Length: 379
Image (cartoon, rainbow, N blue to C red; front, side, top):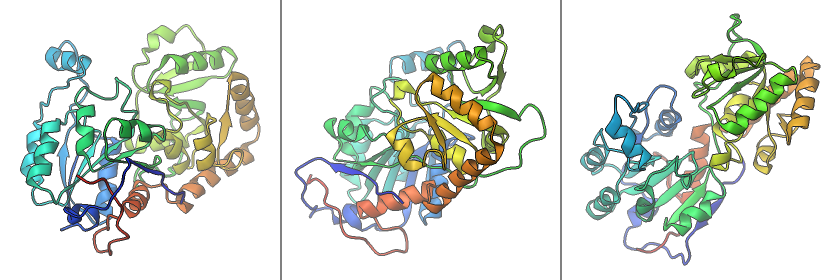
């Protein structure tokens, strides 16, 4: 497994007054806060934490898709970057956290700094760990509350390598870069669907973004049909372009089956998120799907080009790689299978990522011995 990058705010000295927070958990109880809706990767991460031996008390922060006509106040609050805490998540945390050793918050955009300050004051034995798969400096992915909470986390886990220093600069005491992962119960090879609604030569799964739409339109105009599954695409705007097919969003087994039923799975990076890799960068190969992704150094380190995945930089290379792959089915299958093998060999699962991160932090997993204590900033 590749080493996990770690950065901390200097100067660093070992904690002497809150040893329990540093490297000894009082028990295996963990309060987990996150979106538990169907298909949510936050829910997958909680399952992974439970598999590592933690006794999880889950707090569901999901609110569904906010619609401006039926939920005008909630919609305006989100636009103002001050989402309403309609599920009383902050109070639920205060009610639940006392008996636990870890408070884990998955993308806590509704969490208030006053809540974490109360946890720190009343329960000094509790280690507060945050996690986000998104660029939390992207205004559309975060909230006005989030920066104020950062100094109150003990550790923040981010899948954005460039985000380590940025979160430190905002006052977070300790930031750990962890790479994206997959859920072995969801992202696995499934027999390709016999229904033509699933099978296609070239497909893309993801939310609409202008740069993605422009590339897919160019592919269709170049004679390469593409099947698109995802949100916010508004197919009527594209109906005049022959070669673009639109299907509803897929989750769970249907998501994995769609990947397995697609000969070439395109993986675009979200430019507004400054992505260098995404969850789909791991999920597609984990399903033994053939991935053709934008070339980055992080992608190349995760999967070897031409062996475990294929990459492109620019439209001409994208077209060339598509045509070459469709013309060589044995090679396509070999690369797809090798990508799956890499996921298994290096344990790209969420559990594997957490195991490595906790070892780096010196946090023992339930039933294991504490590892070497990691120095953290004094308080």
